[in-house]
Each structure stands twice: as structure tokens, then as C-alpha cells.
Image (cartoon, rainbow, N blue to C red; front, side, top):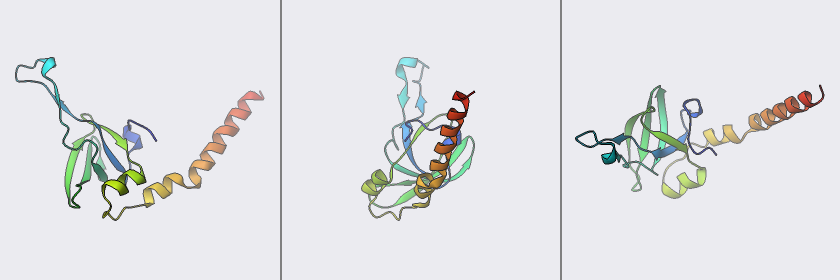
Length: 125
């Protein structure tokens, strides 16, 4: 699982969290006064829509409710969450497993075989 997600890694239905929040500088613009917004770091976010550079998500709270939020991909770094992490933090959440099933399906095994074949073909020339 990748630590920092790139733009083309994101998919609707994916569970992510904030790795590095947006930062602001102090009133005088002094870089020593930079502050990171930490409000949603570690929280379970489910992507519901993407229109780059914006990402709309459901932010799930520990008490079971959620809210919608929009992030600017240029200002925030995201990381993917595992099924175990999501189920532990939000045990009452009806988890959308289709995203993990797609990732763990045969498509990745086929891709690995194709890559292996590509390396084998380059070594024989």
C-alpha cells in the first residue's frame, strides 16, 4: 500500500485519510509560523466524487455520523486506508468492499505476469 497517493491513484469509493494537511503561514507571512491543519488527519474519508484538483469525500466520525467535505489536491497529501483500519475506526460503517475486491482481484495478478514476461523478453535479446 502506497504511503502518499498521486492524482491518478484516487478512485471513487476509495477509503483514504490525510497524510499531510494544508498549511498556512502566520499573519506576517513568516515561514516559521507555518501551521498544518490537522482536523481530519487519520480520519476515515471515503471519496464520493473527483473533479481535479478537487476531491469530495464523506468524513466519518467515531460516533457514527459523517459530513461531506471538499479538499484541494494541490494543498493536501492523502494516503490509502486498509480495510482493517476502516473497520476498527468505524465499526458501524457499512463498508463498501467493492474497491478492495477490485484491487485484490485477478487484474493485479495478470498485470504482474505481464510485467514478468516483459522482463523475461528483454533478457533474451
